[in-house]
Image 1: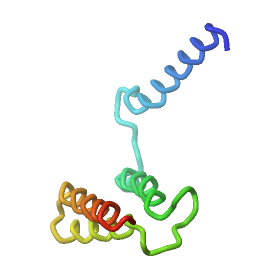
Image 2: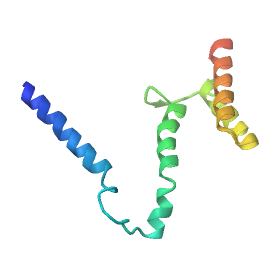
Image 3: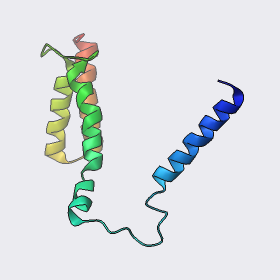
Amino acid sequence: MNGWEVALTIAGLGVITVVTRAFFFLPRREVPMPGWLREGLRYAPLAALAAVVAPEVVLTQGRLIDTWRDARLFAVAAATAYYFWRRDILGTIVSGTAVMLVLRLGLGW
């Protein structure tokens, strides 16, 4: 690519980013949205997080894990149990990480 093509590509990507991210800020008044859509959008961040985390837990190099001796499974179980016990995000992260470290470093899983 020439220098002007790179500059044009960067400018185009910048314009597309600004337009798509500022779409809801451009109108002067609030865009009417049906109640079912507003309710559904409440779950979008949770769905996105699950879509990122779930493959990391159950896949290894693009294939399903084939053994129960995987530290990730026990770390997720411990973190989930802690969350339902205390409802604390920081404790959830710490407990899952602690179980993962013990199993990986201590037992060599």
